[in-house]
Length: 413
Ligand SMILES: Cc1cc2nc3c(=O)[nH]c(=O)nc-3n(C[C@H](O)[C@H](O)[C@H](O)COP(=O)(O)OP(=O)(O)OC[C@H]3O[C@@H](n4cnc5c(N)ncnc54)[C@H](O)[C@@H]3O)c2cc1C
Image (tube, rainbow, N blue to C red):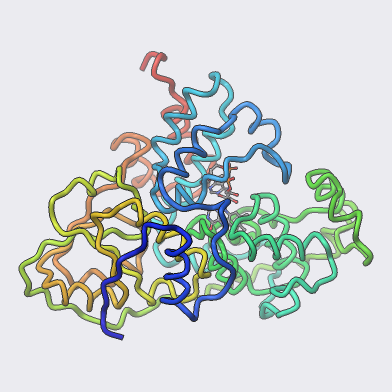
């Protein structure tokens, strides 16, 4: 398909329908009113955070979590401003939310270091893993387990799942069903509004034990406690999660030492000749805010719906991107192959925000490209230290950055 420029409607209902018509192969229901994309909604959520309550209730499925992840993922609000604002809303010592924000940055740090390797096993698994394919009875919510079917349905209906539900679901798929975590993680990624290659792949690896010292698994008592027993009340099948951690450990795992390093490197097919004259500011999907410093620039600004990057994403995720773009009228929206769009625009050079997304960087490598650093959450010296030490575990990462992230304005340096 040759590139086309599109003009998104300013009316949301109409815009969602335009996206449905433009991308007929993308599955799923429309984005709901609960998940309007863009900075205005991201800010509204940020201003509603309750850090003290978050700390007490975040593990509960109906706890005071922020639901900020799609807004952070797409750069509608920056991690740095979320951290700064959270400090104004919490007493020193109420640090749990700041700590969780750091997990997002930590996974990103690993993505910068490891690149596409995050999609293959980072370490040998500590228990034997399976390679079963993901069966339709799971993706169609037909396991007869109200908990698991409910999580899958929520994921498909809304594009969001609470962190604990993501942990239970991924653990069930990997350790009970022995499904290949790479296929399952890709499936979840493509359904999530906050789908993020690093947070997703590496969390799955943490559950699997290929990026952590042990597998994550749970029992019925744990699930019942944090769901107020709701799914269990309607359960009519023998619970596979019942039992002590010791008995489940014995039932689920055979130890293994077998490393199963399987690479998933992709080869980007096109090479771009940059003979044009235009300097293009490319807005990729991590920088969708009119407050992004690059939005103030005078040059032509472009966002591209490129099937190479988005072909498996649920429709509602594309609609979320469109909501974000509707707040950025100075950005031209195109549909097509990234390099072909750049050619049509007579591009001589491209500027964009730095990203660990290796597929995008590979795609742009033939262009005369300049990357502008993302807004940091710690200073350059700390960043260099992290990189120089090649830190891979969160505890070590936190030792390096924690004090700086937690530091309040009023505290002495
Ligand atoms: C199997 C699995 C897959 C995941 N996939 C993704 C993903 O694709 N994208 C994604 O953003 N997060 C992912 N996470 C992390 C986490 O579940 C979500 O960030 C969180 O549930 C988002 O909801 P929230 O905004 O209400 O989080 P809150 O609990 O309110 O946390 C606030 C913010 O902190 C960050 N955060 C909190 N916990 C984590 C964490 N464990 N890892 C990374 N960041 C965290 C997020 O940016 C989140 O928005 C995954 C976790 C698991 C176990």
